[in-house]
Each structure stands twice: as structure tokens, then as C-alpha cells.
Image 1 (cartoon, rainbow, N blue to C red):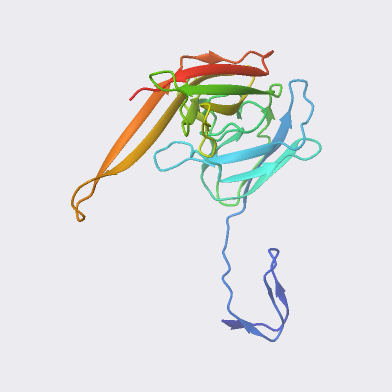
Image 2 (image 1 turned 135 degrees about the vertical axis):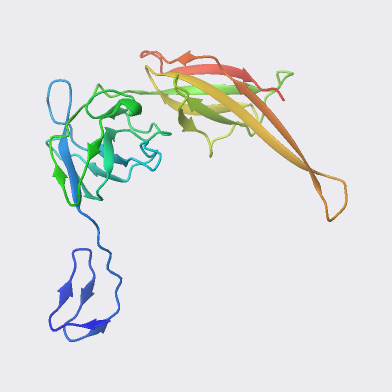
Length: 245
């Protein structure tokens, strides 16, 4: 608790009127910045692109989700602020287990692989400029219908799917999207990309037994496709997959 003789106002909206006493929690954030420009192959700035900074974790690997992000302005310039003193990699669409942006994953200084991204070491309140990214052409979406069948070729209801790239990294997980009574599950993917799809279904049943020691019967059905490539001309594709116990 403290008393002040003039109005105190922070940029985040915390205000203490003059002549009053208040109890406030005030966090101090090291305000490091990484700045740069997002351009296309012709050198033109691209607006409205989310650029992300991924901190290096205790295992000396980039974290799977971004610590901070910023959106490029009309000229393609971005400024990621409030960064603590750490090492980072910078990317567009760089989250490890997601692929939601129409631009392919692109890491500074160039390329689509996280493990080859250049690390940027940032000191306390340090600012680094010129961390520029050149993006390939944006992708278009394609619908893939996954038809899930059991061992007797009957449709399976309630199956989920996990979509990986050829490196084995998950790109889509249908946690809120399961197969219907017809066994079909619709996935939104990207033209020009190559995938492997795994589908699975779990069921459990409480078995008869003692009240104080119940037994649970767990069953699992699982199946995996081969490599699937969605061509640039395909808007729609269908794949049938049989699950086995």
C-alpha cells in the first residue's frame, strides 16, 4: 500500500487517483523486441500476417506454441514486443502441432523446418531489427472425406483422426470432429501437401465384479493410411480406412 500526491496511470489502464491509497499488483515485464518485414518473392510487403516468436525451452528446443506474436501492418512490418531475455526462433505458421494459416510454415531466415531455424538471442530490453521473412505463395484448402470402416466393412461412428506430415509431426487433430453414422469424417487440409492419416476409436465397459474393485474393459480400434498427396488441382478427395483391434 502506498500514497501518492498525483494521479498515477499505467498504459494498461491501472489508475490510482491522487490523494488515495490503493493495493495494486504491478508486474514488470522485460520489453525486448524482434522486428522485421514480411514480404513475398517479389519483395512486396504482405499485410495482416501473424508473426510468432517461439522461446527455446530447458531442453534446448523451440517450444511448440508461440510465446508472443504480432501482426504485420500495411507495409508488411511487424514488431513483437514484451519479450524476456532468451533465445527465440521466428516464424509464420510455426506452431508445431497446428497448420491453420494459408501460408506454409516459414521460419527465419528461410525454409519450412523448425530444426533449421536460426536462433535469435535477445538480451534484457534489447531490440533486434531486420528479422525479415519471405513467404511462398498462399495455399488453398481442400476437403478430404475419410470413410472409416470396421473389419467387416461396416461404417464406424465416433472415430477420430490425426493428420501428420511426412516427417511424422501432427498437423490436424479432429478432437471435436468425429465420424458420423455413415462412418464419414470431413477434414480441411491444404492443396499441394502430403499427409499420413491415422484414425482410431476407443470404447470402455464396466465389467461385473466387486463394488470396491470394479474392472474396466477397454477396447481400441486403429488404422493408418499410406502417404496421401493432395494435388494443386484437387478441391475434394476421399479415402477409405479400415480399423482393426
